[in-house]
Image 1 (cartoon, one colour):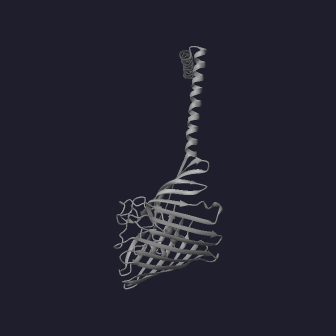
Image 2 (cartoon, helix red, strand yellow):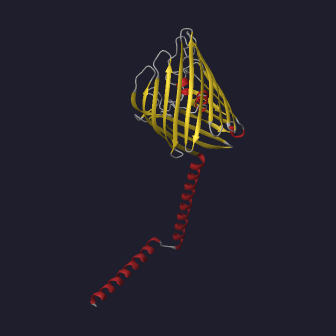
Image 3 (spheres, helix red, strand yellow):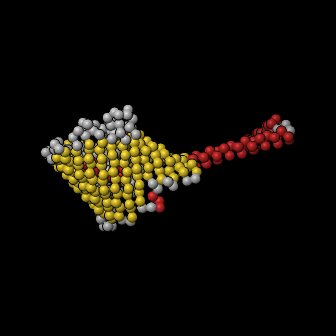
Length: 380
């Protein structure tokens, strides 16, 4: 009973002390009604200013700029043999499509005008290195900035060439460095095109295709060598494509006068023209390309190329097949490169697929080459 009384007394004493402390605090910090009113008004103004500033910053961040991280990772195991070489097992990066990582973004400038940029770097997944090789710049796939609107898009920097776009979009294996006959014969290690797939110091324009089936892409670059030096001319390129329903056709051409690659003795320029077409019959999509590459140097050279291919959709998969022929001729020598590829690509989801592919290549005067690979590709 005494314990209960003591607990009750202690609770009443604690409550009384707490009440006196709160009353003392109110008397200390609110000495007059006028001061209280001014403090409340000041606090209210500060809160309103902070909320307005935060809302303004958020709206500016959303309306002014946006940036996106994206890319693709392709890795495969293969057993391959280059023409004239020997077989070897290896882990490859980008056999079906070159691995890369990129950033793109835009800023709304008002009136339908936007500032745009794009930065893309090739990746070698097998070693963790950047670039297709050790000589590539870090942003080798693209590094550009420009303006976009109803007139189309114009960008400056390192940009993809119209001829390369025509080559990869009109064959079933696309840009595959391992299995696309067209990509290998135009731009591969033994490819006949000089000037790379992308040009430094370039200006590129694409029209706005929203209201027309006609696609227009032109590009030009400025050499940075002194005037009159070897390879100091400009590069020019253009592509026109017509796309209507299941049918598409394109005509692309370029002149290369400067390139960081090695050039033949007495090199002046190289002209390339290419015609491509595709038609989707629903059960099968067919592709065709024909082109000519002419190099003007001490020893002039001309190459005639053609490619035929198809893609057959089967459920969540694609069967791909392509054959390419490149006949290279000069006054001293003539060689023919014949390449045939077949592949099976199964999509586990819209972003991830697995594949197997095989290629056979024959080259005049040397033993044939072959590649067999199986891999996985993931987009993000």
